[in-house]
Image 1 (cartoon, one colour):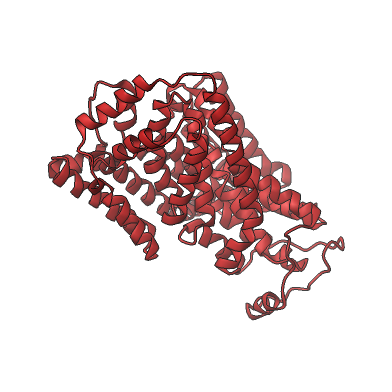
Image 2 (image 1 turned 120 degrees about the horizontal axis):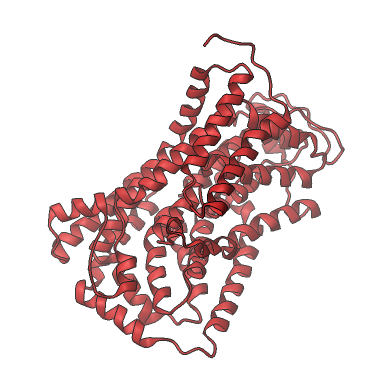
Length: 501
């Protein structure tokens, strides 16, 4: 294929592959009642490549652009594989069953949703991983919720609210470090600046879960026979002792030592295997099988079996293949200039700070929708919007907060995103089996969507929207960026471009 003159796409042409892809997704979901977004996203990649070829891009270049973004997301794939291993060995070791057993003994049904959200928040802040928290503590909470006869989607909503909010403010989290790195801000300044949206969002979500918990249980007898059956099944098939919590303790210690996520989680998987061998009577070959294909057991209790028969790398193949295809789609959109044209169009319409903050949050959300990766939803808008914030004299702490709220928090609410896919797979929501009612966890993850709304309202009101300090302006100057500081809300605009944070 010979080289052509590359044409810049118009806004309509840039939006076309996104609209068509969402249309194909809608047909798959609503017409065929089949939630497997892989092929619709692959069609979106093909549509984008075709339109790019019509604009003069060579296939080799588009392929390189797509694979470059796929390469960026390979860390996500590695984490997914390790999370699959850790789920398998932590069930086999008795770690997850012990948590379920203790939770059924200690928690009350009325407080369960609110307490579950707080527990996931604490664990996620400590470990710095929402995915690991979802697949371990979140899975245990699903078992406790089943014992209390609480619908799966309510429990999943509380788990997601806590796990991803903890990830958002943890200094050990990769996304919490990525957002300030992309925007050129300090990590702990970034965390402090997120508190005005984090605290009220969590309080509102906690209150809702508390009210719902009491109203759901009030007047309805709790099925203690079911709880007794589940706890008896755990006691029969697992040796329960504080020893089984050692894998979780090891991961917590490594996280506090600021060890990287992948080796820390892998160490937890290995520790789980060691406890399974020494305490539960498993063989080394069994542990390898748990890591590869997941744990299997027949307790005779249907609810318990559905929770414990899971894990392993193979359980994550659905998610991994989805992530790879979505990343390729996002890479093609970026290489052909579609995403840049859309962001530039937004910037031209954002003459005031409030609209600019809303546009940055919205761009992160849309990138989550079309690219399927939380890292790209932070990195791409961060690079594109940084010059605009600096040009208007506003601290890029505002931008890093918008990226976390539209990127980190929204990712679990998009089922074909890496975050949403890990939630559906790790929590056993069974969406791919036609149980679409479990997608109700999306609106019920209150903290995840309330926070972006509060952040946008703050921006329009001018609350908690810091201007650039003298030190920050000096840092911009040191970075070699000759940016004319425009008075905030003066109506002046700035040409968008790539930031060099």
